[in-house]
Image (cartoon, rainbow, N blue to C red; front, side, top):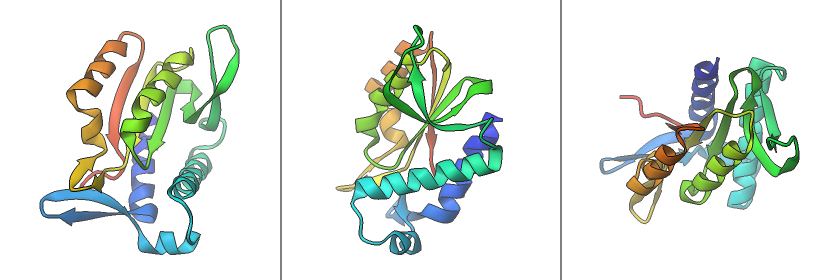
Length: 171
């Protein structure tokens, strides 16, 4: 089921939220103008929150709430809850999904920590938007850099981390 959910998220984001655009030979995800117009002038944090809520609701509607939970609290091994939340959690598969619309470099370690703290999670998908800033491409490439790949490798005995593009390029 997890592959279906990830594909659904990617398809939904590509159809409703982002256009894949090209600048020279660099492909990246740009917010769809019609979606931006529908939400009005809001900060980037509010925009990301609205997009996440939209994806969460679409996933739950498609796959049912008993199969997928949104904003699930992280549960430590002693059963205690903390203030961390998982964007999506699929209990039957023991999989967490974190979706990043902005600076993945700021979220990467925190997302891995949240999944490691939750004893129910053994696999984490970090689904990131490719974005262009100052001519540099961030997103999936950021997670594949040597330092970040070292973090993924370091936790691999306890947690499988799967870096995933939000809107894969279709050629």
